Length: 426
Image (cartoon, rainbow, N blue to C red; front, side, top):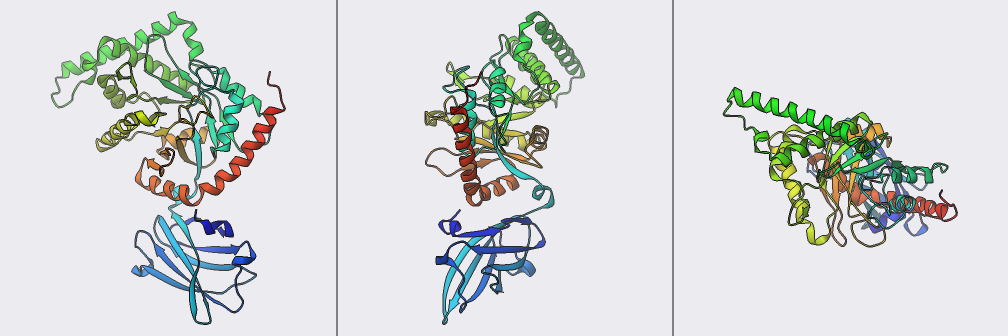
């Protein structure tokens, strides 16, 4: 959003592709008001150099009315269009205002962009602040939804929800937890589930019986594949160690339970370096992607600046899987452990293009590949990962729309923060 954008109200900035749309430009202050003795015209440039009738730059005379400029234009294709308005007074031509409009195909036009973080911690595990404080802080930085996901704990997410249940706010707080099965180092997120998966591990005997049943089924499937002797089909299960086989069966069990709870299972940071090795073995990671027991892949996780190579690897793995024809739903998360430390918080997030911000549609939209992951490291331009058309649109939103959106969110976040200061949470 350019400096001059604070002086004007432009509506709409998002229009339908291959349609004619009405645009209104309203000056907000006296120093930029329209002049009665001036002439105005507009030049439209489509960023992908496709214009109506193959004319790259389209010129249109403008006629002020009621202190505003109102006009209609045809916006071809799914792309950004740069509109330059010129003012001519006494034969002298100056650029009066420049702004952008984005045109979308019908499917994306009917969806709205929502910013969210589905992996963040509080002082109930290894974070620094309370669930209510984390939620209000997330709203202040422009997020539209979150899930508190403390290690092995579901209740903190409910505490965050209950803290603001009497407030009429637009911010969505969903239940969640980071799932840690017995003797399984793979990290998973239960996003939005109606019950806790970690609580189910208390009946460890039942859990182990069900995981062993899954393992026996996988072994039987592996034996059948070996008997088929299909030389063109690599048997990735045979590459797994005994530990990998248990971990896979455990993950399969967890992701199944998360779906039973109505949630979305997220496969977390497989290239996190812990104890001088990746958190997930190469063989297990390959089998996870081949069979896809999870619902979404954490393509961007909360790595500090000295460990961003892990995110680079996660992105590269995602791209390689897409080349193989394996489309994988993705999310980006901060995995932040403090909102005030200056580390991780707000550095990574997800944009979901959904009909509304309700949980079922957020989950459904991610599963249908309507999400991108954003990396916004301090002092650097944002980088967006995901399907190309969504990345293109997200970059426009980050530049042209989200600054105003985030300013509104900041005010609501301040209100939430003042509210929890004056209420004792029991």
